[in-house]
Image (cartoon, rainbow, N blue to C red):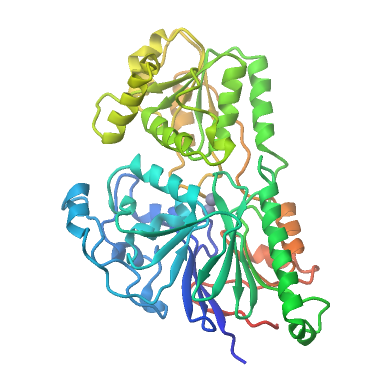
Length: 504
Ligand SMILES: [Zn+2]
Ligand SMILES: [Zn+2]
């Protein structure tokens, strides 16, 4: 019997990031995407960091976003909501498309697992009739990030049909049930999905780790999967007899494998301890620090140390605005710390010009709260009367010229997984520039992704009939790694549908 369920991978195959998983279940007449990201390594082969695509076809022609003529779908991309920033400004575009309705489409939804752009970049371009399912906090982070970014096509979310969920909610699409379950990752609000398909249970891991402060959340995904499997088996005892197995297996696990072939024993706690060791014998007056600005846990680790040693912490106003939005709408306790307004050791480094609405907003908020002494300019760095951490993303001329030459500094690179979440990894450029002015570099780091032993345990705990590796450039390695473990590893190829039959 032909399978009612098939999966076609358009992105995230044999590459880290850019997941685009097309899922079809003819039993429910449902077509949907699991994540709709872009692979930033491939993207960077075609676009400079400051260059912006202005139409979806620029990206689909390069196979950076899904090509609808290769899938049985129509009107995946929006007709009216594509924002060309060279033709008009944001407000003009917003007013122009306000009452326009995109043509009908046969896509029933796009599920976004977490707010890293390699998983959601393409949603700004999709047909506005397609519901975007994502977590409440996931959407807040996506929106806050876009609000603090430049107004271009990839940040234009007007008219999107958001459908928000929390862990323990059930998504129902034409009767097909999908369970989102939180997982631990290097950004808050990350989820895996459990789909009760016509051919049994299909699990999509999203990106996850087992060594972060909230690693129990990843265990919840495993537990929920096994609970649903037991429920399914007790409801359909015939199925398990048919499969001649003691219990009916999970049909398929689509599992991330960023670090499947090598790992380190590390944790966020370890990052904090390493920093503490450095501070204990510290001959430096300040540290320049670099990590992924969305990595809230890393920011907290650094600021914890700053507070412990009575140092100040300086961030850019863009980050201050983004963190302020998250603090303000925090749903997890971990998202309230650091607190941009309340933590008086945090200083905001202002840009020279006040150009964007978000700049005015964050400046006004600090003024209204009587905290404007914590708004500083570049030339204040020279007579700053306390030791400080300064968060940087690039080494600009202005920063270099304003670093206090009478003080001694060092650089700490703490980026999460270069090339996995964002394409712009410039740590080596920074290290090279700093070497010329006598600033040494350190590396203190813990990854956002599960290690080989964690992935093996995760897979064995779920124990699927079929394992499909994704978000890895070592997919063949999965086959070798699981050769003795009775797990059938299916290597995906782009645009080659995989039938998820209930038996192998
Ligand atoms: Zn990713
Ligand atoms: Zn991620």
